[in-house]
Length: 157
Image (cartoon, rainbow, N blue to C red; front, side, top):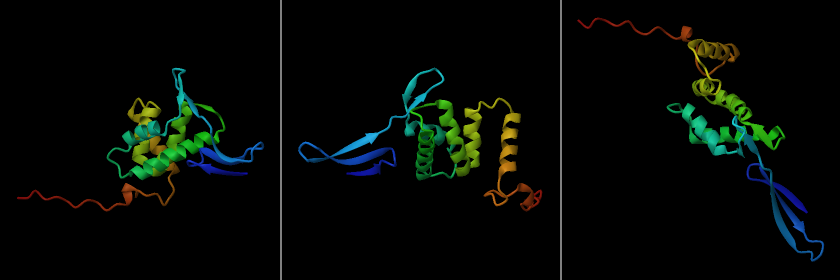
């Protein structure tokens, strides 16, 4: 009779009618999404696990809980859009990188350094160089070369 999405698009509510008695009833259909970890263990996808990992990277950054909730929702939507009932944990991590980079570049570097197992300063330098090269000219952070020089300090004597 009638179908509508519910729960941020993760479920479909259907209004139905029994062909025998003509009574109406509602069903809710959801899809399950499982994550396959490196160990081979499969567990249900969890937005809260995404939030925990991203929250650590955002510690001390100007990122709100609402920002994090939107990011977790974006990640889940990207994973569901893959159309598979099972995804590798690696895919979840990749799905986090893009939205996190848009949200906060420092948090992105923190997350990427753990997720991509940075082992040296060169790994950070490469990631920063890539960020700078791909940053739009109207990026949020000004180029340090364009900032005024700090005032000279006297000896105070």
